[in-house]
Image (cartoon, rainbow, N blue to C red; front, side, top):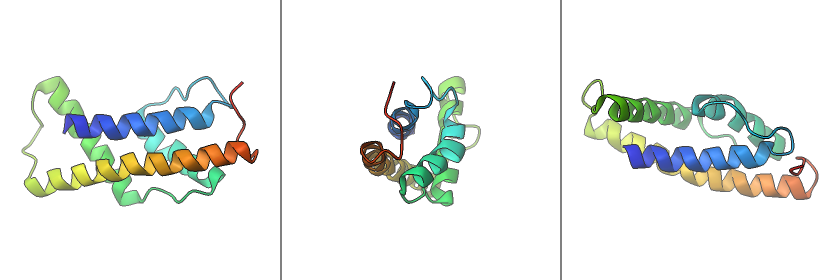
Length: 118
């Protein structure tokens, strides 16, 4: 659980940070806001497809499970095999979506649709 969340969160955080460099030094927002606010905004600005709402929701569940495991040593309730598989799959989609969005961000910067870093 923890490595899957870290992989998706790090990849998404990098692309969000890269996309907003021309606007601000850092996003200053947490992962949930990156998922729910900044990713859709960046996708719209770059013409990239949006990350499906179901995947965003499951990534948020994965984040919550990771937090409980990291801070309490175990999840609040048992995570079923099916739920774990769904979370791992969402993490994989999130990781690869970040790569796709990164390509769109780079293209948008080259084309002048996004500002380059100061």
